[in-house]
Length: 457
Image (cartoon, rainbow, N blue to C red; front, top):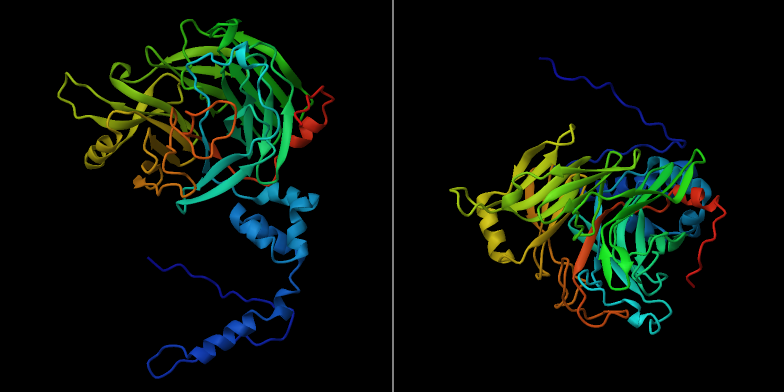
């Protein structure tokens, strides 16, 4: 077979500078003086200062957020790009999607109607600085984000399209904020119509629409909740909108203990407990259906995640009465919507290490694109990353911004930097897939609506 032939490529420069070629010494290696001369010529400011701004902007739009904010320190023009409508439009067109994650300190106990009207008169007012911990799975790097404008009494529940969804903790109609932490913007949505305690919330944002679903934990009295209904919020670029006007009934005997929803191809999915199954909500038809989970009698700590555009179930399998080794497995929901296919199993040697660290405490998972993060409860130093593309398992370095008594997972724990009216006892992390973006196109859609948005200042 003949080798591929590449035609010679010529580079055209607007100035008549010679392109240097490094000379070599008798050992065949380039002379350092020759290399330095070549670098000085290539970095000549008379060349680079004449690059068209549109080309520079296009290059900057490809930078990951940490590099972009470092670049803002170069000059006034770079600093002002974040306020440029032309640049943000270009950014939305060419910036690549990044399958990153963001984690927050968990502060809301989900098994207690403690906040029932007894604390309603004593809630604190003002702003409580919330911190988020951004994780880059490509480079295994951690970054810290501040949410200084988020009021007290709000907790993060979901993420999509570069925005973080915060919901009010107070029992009753839920107030919802969409926040972009990179630019410090907050978009308030109108409150839900039905009173709830800690509902499950799903969010999906595209370039032309936003869909939000709030399900379960209906307050049937000041002292009791029941999973009864779903409320939906929809806006699209064609001018159609439904402001919590679409409701539907939940399947009988459903339990949303995790509070998480995963969006894949027009549907929200969530785990149903006791017994294990998967609930699916079709946004277009406003209908729920139940999907049987694989090996449901032998699952432990099941979690639903999004992986490469599919619904993936991650769980430990423990068949104590059968001669089958314990393992951690991943199943993908097939296109038919009812069948599951096992796509990965943790190597047995790694699972032995994992089980020793996990020690039966349980774990939770979050997925985004080709990555899944598996977080061990009550252990701040241990979390696993699985790469679907490379079929590789990696122990994640611990987050350097957490104190020794902060745990990387859901549940109870204590926090050094706790802030809020919940007292001591919260502090573990919960996370979402997050694509850090400088702009979200749906902001213009929301601005066009004349809604009685509530002020949270």
